[in-house]
Image (cartoon, rainbow, N blue to C red):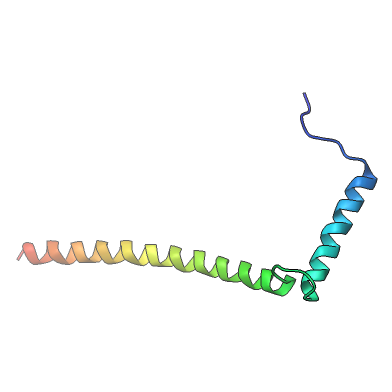
Length: 77
């Protein structure tokens, strides 16, 4: 059974036009919200933040590994 709603092409076109118009108003400063360039910058910063967090986790794991190896080496002496 198909549970998705079916909208006519006219309704879909009108909805898309409204979204584009609202975003254009934001870009012109006529409406509250993020401009297109601000939204792109935010996405780039979020992506960079994710990558840096991932790299930080890798470095933490590597640091713990090498610290444990150093302790093991000292205990064997």
